[in-house]
Length: 197
Image (cartoon, rainbow, N blue to C red; front, side, top):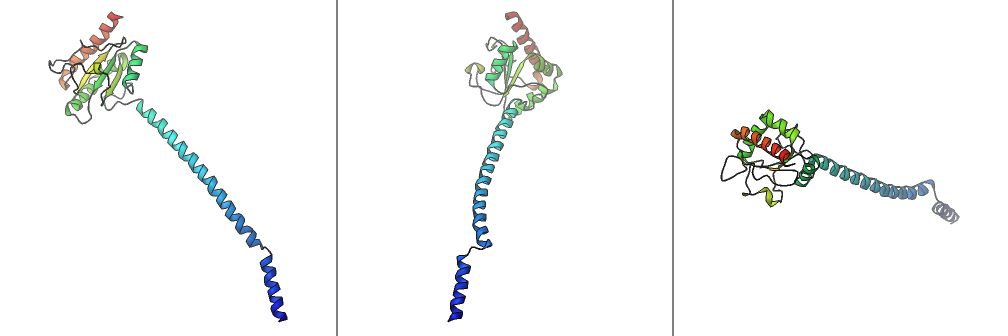
């Protein structure tokens, strides 16, 4: 019996005393929970940073959408920006309406890029915009919504209805063989602009 009492006291002593293992275990769990909370905050901050930098990169990508129409040309991102730059620079805005999967647009694009004089005028004398969606301005479709279609807007924000292509049914369309006419019309838009100012 005495041996049982001594054994019970020893066990009670072990149970009653906190060992190094029992002190460390709860702390490790608290630290792990604290670390989990800290890790969650760090991950949340990283996710926010990645999203923010992704939107900045998207904005940067929107600034120069050549879409194959000439990489050396400075393209505006949208119609509103084009109008604002036309006013501030006193240069006409040239708007090219096209579709990526349209064979007529693709043929015009190749001819446009291949013509060095057109590329030079576009780069130096015009605010350039190419769009695959309509601008929302009904003045940009004076004779209908079709592609390809090229219109000019002068710095007074007037659409130049007098600068047309060779077709009577689609006045503002050009084909790959019309680069000489397009170059003449670009010069006309430029010269009439100077006469009007």
